[in-house]
Length: 271
Ligand code: HPA
Image (cartoon, rainbow, N blue to C red; front, side, top):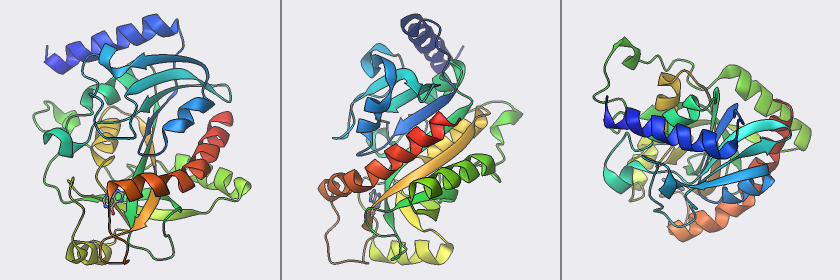
């Protein structure tokens, strides 16, 4: 048995034991600035990643490193406060155990959130994008080394049409504008160059960021329905006079985080 299979089994057993029979339907991975969404969870059981084999070590500022299981609007959820990024370890499969554990404990749906830069001036800092597709030119896959035909995952409809429709409908009800987004994954941790951003825009990318794509691929491989929301924290490199920094990302993430939090609560209440 692969080491990761043992970790998934062990992590699932710990979560099941501590949550006494709650079977979460949706797994949610919170990106930079979205940690406070966990406060919306009713009857929460909080498990530190340190207690879960194969879960990420707390790394980037703004990430708590906790799994919170409970309900939102009556829907059982498992929420990850913090994720591992490719740039921390050069391991594209850094989120393999957490995503597969979410599936193993019951999650049929995976909702990803992240902070991203925008190549679209109409969707500036503070706006929210609902991803319809992605581009990865990183040259890496979280499924490297995987065996069996299932590894040849079809990503044609990676971002589930029904989930997108529901999220758009609830956003409209709440008066939140959801921009259509195509996310281009860059390795980081450095930001992109202006030339890379010009290239990304020509290729059709509207958002650029350093996360989520490995999780989308892992989620689809595990048979989950996937949706992803990007909080726009900045115009991408070369599009504004403001220097890019992690501090700026964290400050601007707060603005859009409130919209995403309200949207997710509404969505889950009607799940
Ligand atoms: N590029 C990459 N990742 C990001 C950005 C960006 O401009 N903003 C927030 N995360």
